[in-house]
Amino acid sequence: MTGLALGGDSARRAIFLDFDGTYAHHGVVPRAHVEAVAAARSHGHVVFLCTGRPVSLVPDEVLASGFDGFVATAGAYVEFGSETLLDLRFSDDLAARAVRYLDENGALYILETPDATFTRRAVVDAMTEHARRSGDPAAAQGLRGILDALTVQEDLSMIRPSKVTSFAGPVPLQDIATLIGPDVDAIPASLGDLGEGAGEMFLAGVNKATGIAPVIAHLGLTREHVVACGDGPNDLEMLEFAGTSVAIEGSAPELLATADLVVAGPEHSGLVAAFVTLGLIERP
Image (tube, rainbow, N blue to C red; front, side):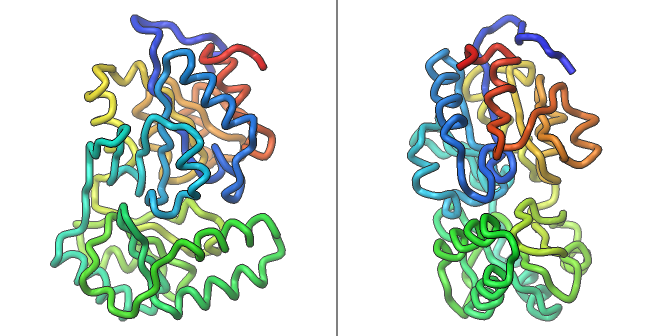
């Protein structure tokens, strides 16, 4: 743990914030986090939302709240201002193979693209019932926010996704990924609201660090200028990549072992403490 303000050959930092469980709590962003991002940007830093979600599943008020750009779909899609720096998707053949094996194994899944997120009516019904039965009102509200943003259609054969997210199903998503082949990998879902056993499938070798790399190249910065904050399975690579890494209390042991700093979750506005400790902003 550094416990110190950042040093180095440039005062400017590129800050990458995971969304669910880091910047937001079940989709709700504390006002103090919005203000901390604005303050960091006013000090000359650039701040990106770095999320497993596609841009289409990030709430509109978050998109408009003031970021320099977005690393979305766990590193497969990157926006800086109005410019697209990266847009990686399944090939036609891989997408068809993925849908076939997902269907054959009874998966309830959504196909994520930068512009929209697609699924079938049966998945919406199952997720709606899961939200209804949830004992956590905040989790249920977060899941309903996702449901409202889905595009429902039965024929998914023409969709080339950046990533696939599955709801809890009879076969672990990691096992389905093995059947599809070495072009894809899978991990447990970063969205706990989707239920036990849910997962994320993505192009092999693609992760949040994949998305960060073109950003810092575009800005003329290096890994030492990167500050990354996260809490979930898909945040490990970006924390390992960053010059300074911040994990959220309660994160998996491998994230906590990697982190230079550990702070409270978004329900306690933990990023404010991180930004102050690292000298990115003054104490409010």
